[in-house]
Image 1 (cartoon, protein in one colour):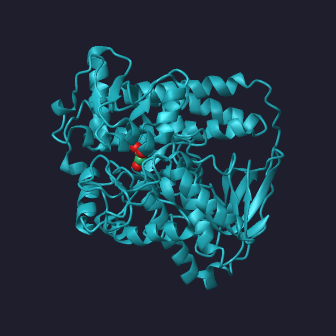
Image 2 (cartoon, rainbow, N blue to C red):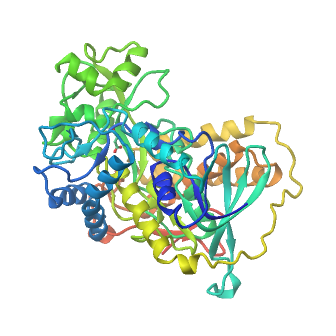
Image 3 (cartoon, rainbow, N blue to C red):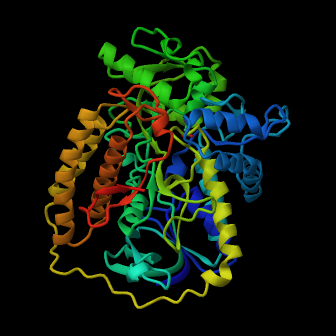
Length: 541
Ligand code: SIN
């Protein structure tokens, strides 16, 4: 397979980029399950932008910086916020049906979320991501230059040497090895490869993320030698539904934005003890407060109470949440919703510049996979869909401006995939056991509140598991489960190593041994794979 643009992932970042670059050349999007199995599709809250006359660019910039705990790149924040309104208008032009409000100068009904000083979240009730995904997919399917391949998984990036490579090292990405829907490994060559594989939530036992969120793009980029950043900053969403049958159902922050109150098992509110903004404090604060309350009381969950609001308003504003909770026997208009924090968003990732370029030639990264500098130590709610569309446009602009050079790339001969002595793995238990082990280690030792001792223990455990998985990977034919397991093992190890390097508490990274933010750590944690080191070992940049 040869194409101009290979896009790995079919969420908002990948689809937006595909639509914009299709005028330049052929586009292949591969997605490892169905086209809608993306984090975008589950996004409830919306997309933050300065759209109302009551708001101003500086407010959104200040809110983003305050949430980011001193680690945001100020130029990137300004760039994203300034471009936000235009990108939202692009989505509307593409057919995204945000909820309207003629009373507001924006013409839109704008939601409120934690850390925002104004109402600025454009939404489609509580299914904003689904509505955006629908509109983008519709557009993609109308374009004959874009092909979407479902059930195709990238295994590793295809790296080649070019004239700029030192010592003939492979520093240029020329596509990927892909496990097809027929379980054959194929070579996909591309002039530009773009990682849009979403986040890493499945590394943790409890997560709001879809099953696809196994950090594939991050793992592939690291193995290929890319510079990574800030992977210790894992955002835990404060309120996921606590119910044995609800695997990963989010109760949007917009529910708190509309006045819901967090209470303990006795119905007592507690957020006033932690932050004057109470329920609308930033996510790091709210998630830690809930964690503290649960640890002190020994309760399995806390509760979100919106019963004081008009029932019809609640049903209309949150139809998905109302319907899903009702399926689990909770009528949110009459009863409190049991909630717990869960892993939600990776603020770090593959480091990019302001055009979405990674440190490797021919490789771009967009959306949650990328670390652009926008989120710093704690992402502001609803800034992620915004980042995805702003950077998709920037990356497409870069490709258009440089297409004359990029399009001239000549593919060197590429080795086909070698299965070697690999056998068929007929013991899936080897996969499931390790998968479960990793997710428990990460939840118990690398969660919302960390200690150096627990991180060190996690590292030791994970190194052993990681070696075992790498051996399975060599011994057996690749399968979808094997690819994901290998990636979550690596990503876990990267999160732990990053966390161990930051000996302070800042934003989402709270280390009991070092409870204060320290000036010496007011910088990103940039790293890459260690030259001559063990597989998975990092070297700070
Ligand atoms: C939510 O609806 O609470 C999620 C929004 C986000 O993660 O930005």
